[in-house]
Length: 447
Image 1 (cartoon, rainbow, N blue to C red):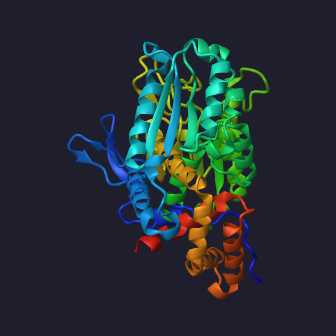
Image 2: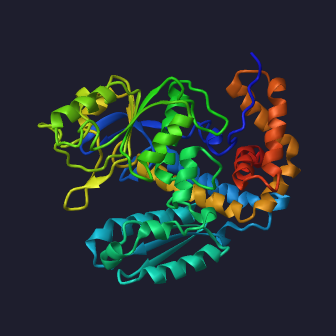
Image 3: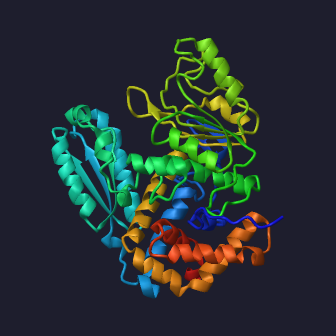
């Protein structure tokens, strides 16, 4: 069979990550007084005396810092200082507003993680009386500031600002080169189309990363040249249709050759009527088919079942499925997070995420990683020069990835590798290709 040329993205950090022995993608841990096995490990956190093995976050964040310190050893990149580049988060809401308390805690976590990765963190806290005009003016300044690698608004805004400011319009004015959280609708569209873009939405990206690690390590699935596992032949359910999680995840999974069921949502099967029995039947028919469930409904507590406040219960899933639950809802106390999946369901799954230590840390890690990439976009000419300086290494690495994915000899894939190298260094090509290429050769440079 003739070699079929590959022209999508190639490179990234996952090829390195999934090969790390210290990266424990699946662990056993206690949670809410129960012991769970086959937990998908997004963090690798320390709690009291118990230390969990290194997960997604605690493997990548130190590696980004290590790579940043190594930039000085690369001739074309030696003038880049990671501390000169900032991840900017904008929080709008008064300090006594309980509605933004969780957001304030989340922003603090992102800031601390950013600094651990070697970048600088900038948090702008604005009162709820701030106007749309004032926000637009500040955004223009942030877009022009070369020291800001990425910027994001922590949504929703609190108080009066949350009611009066059109945040969709505001986010659509974030420069695409700094849209690190995928809030601009152009970024969302490009991601859904699988087109070249600077960044992805962080939560669906983190969900794909966690699922890919499991599929590659436990199921022997091939890694695509872009570092995502092959979903070909798998039936995948996306539960939720939010603009920055469910919808882009649904669309991009189709581009990874998955058979996508959904997006399932609160009106699926209702026919416009509040018919719970019909809805539950449709929900169950879809979810029982799924090899993988990506859940991001997020409306806990539900009233779908008489004996459970969760959306997915044991009889709705098939044996040995994979469950990636990104939903995080709170009761009135705002302290205890709940997902979409009833804990009783986990015994049927091959692997699953918990409400704490799963998708959340993977999302934050994606965000910080995109800040690191944003720094490289600010220095794209130097990145391309570095690739040219290491031309044989880039070509051979590309060729090896292509041959492994196609199941052919490196000789058959070599011409394709040369073409993709030329795309990465060409001044007219999208910068994402150059940054992907640098990331995939970094482990060899560090040796």
